[in-house]
Image (cartoon, rainbow, N blue to C red; front, top):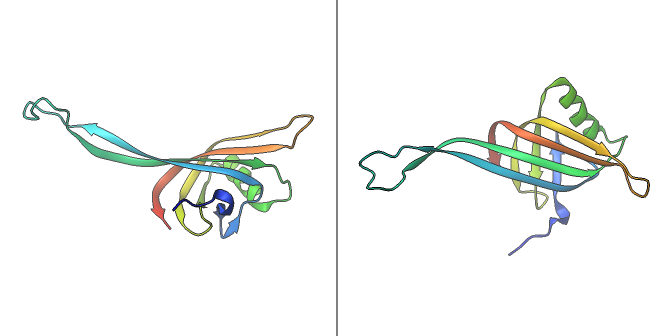
Length: 126
């Protein structure tokens, strides 16, 4: 059965990041070509390295300490440990390094916040 995205939470150090209204994670698996003359004319591959890309976006909340923690970690070049829980309890956890942060605004809208992160180590299912 499908689940609703309304219960999604992104957690840093045990606290939910405020203002986030969109989250996606992409798990990437590198493949390595090991085709030989004995492969019968077919390409043969094995699994190589695994990584994950995480994208978060939503509204800027200047008083949200978790948003501030993400920005501070980005500026310092530090990892953050995040959980992405798509039903509020089950999802993925790992250390991530921010590759970009974007904030913007329009006259007729809210101030937006988005961050792109790359895994820095193992990703686990929680």
